[in-house]
Image (cartoon, rainbow, N blue to C red; front, side, top):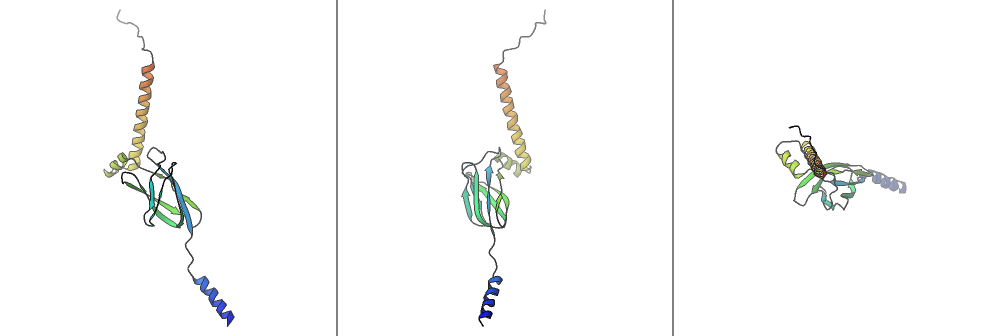
Length: 151
């Protein structure tokens, strides 16, 4: 009788559903120029979890159920941007998030690919920086003296 009770207890133990494995999710939130964003609120809306990025733009969630999670980054202007992250059963997943600029998002609303808009914006900023550098360099040079061809 005792053996039957022990066997029944062992069978019941193995028949219980196992707990979902837990993994961690961390990463960095960067702006459209790849600079870390401090103080951004990072949430997993379906789980009601929230954290704030530190001075280096990093965030971390621990003990998440394995699988895909939708991560939201909320900015000061009440705008949200989303990313998907796959959390392993054990260990840690890294999901760095690059935010689109407001201009890129506006262009996306008008049907332009936001990645292309972000690249165009970055190239335009680089071109303006180069133009400023060249102008400053030209202003520090001595004027060129041209030969007199009139005479």
